[in-house]
Length: 103
Image (cartoon, rainbow, N blue to C red):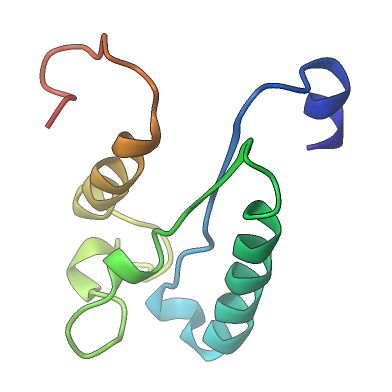
């Protein structure tokens, strides 16, 4: 962030939260705390955004939705990236997105 601010002080920066995943669920308390601290930090500057992908990836039981992860239970599959696409897209300032991405 310092490098970007040094050369482009007005450029907005979006931080995509740390995502929870089944493989590292034992570390979820640290993930939640880190996301909370980063979110507080981003709210101190209008040129910073916090995009929460952690919560949209959880099921009704509060655990990561298993169907959105690859067999390794760490990396997302296409369904997981679709959640990210839907979550991040509203933060993008573009109005000229290629057809099919505007959903």
